[in-house]
Image 1 (tube, rainbow, N blue to C red):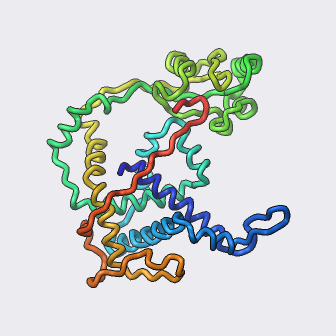
Image 2 (image 1 turned 45 degrees about the horizontal axis):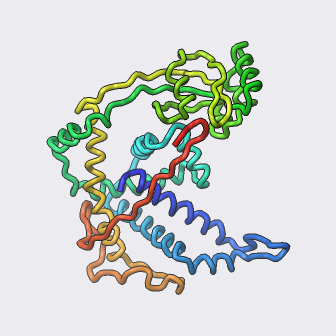
Image 3 (image 1 turned 120 degrees about the horizontal axis):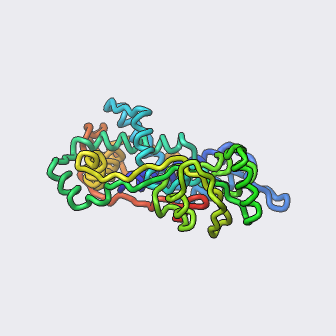
Length: 330
């Protein structure tokens, strides 16, 4: 399972777990023509669903991973979490990361919690991952082109619905008005409007063709003429241009090492988690979830650091969410 897939699974559990907690305080969750639907009735209905069982399993797993880290002196720094998040963000089109979190009601704290668990698992299983220099070189030779860095640009834009308004915006900018202020006043792009039109850094093919053509040909800092796309009319300003780079074995080694580590680690994760659960003392107080967790194994205690349980199971997988604000294409 890739870092993106593992993060998606973790965030889904966090999102649903948060919604369950929000409904646990009592009262009325909704009214229908004045008739109340109580939160207790809602929770009772929810508890009987397969999803509720999945969430409880995930919450137990979260607790076991946290306990394992404490028992084995595994610590995760903020710098490690930030580095992993930056790595995953590279898989999302420009501007779509924040939009993805917002659309799912998630915060950066939610992301950091899921990433912390990933990093704990990486350290717990690290002793079983063996990557030789020859493996890295072989992978690089077979996938060399994928490590080349294409030309990129950093740009901002203002999106409006018609040509007349686009020409008005163009003149305002060319007369010296602040791009950020004009974007906040006139732009209809919800993903960049409040950020002064900022789209971040992107490569060719991440934007619709008409936008792409101007973004990769316009002089830096110039205000473009109106550019028509399926979303409306754009006024574009390229803020920086980053030349492409041809990868070397040295420059690609960190990324290849991480990829090979994930490949080796993937089949170890689920058996390891099963081992934690089987050796744990888990008491279920709600009869709805009776039998959800296996009886503890005779020999108690957590597995030693870097060990995995003997049983095997396939890791769950999920597709990474996609989507990007205008003018991005997915």
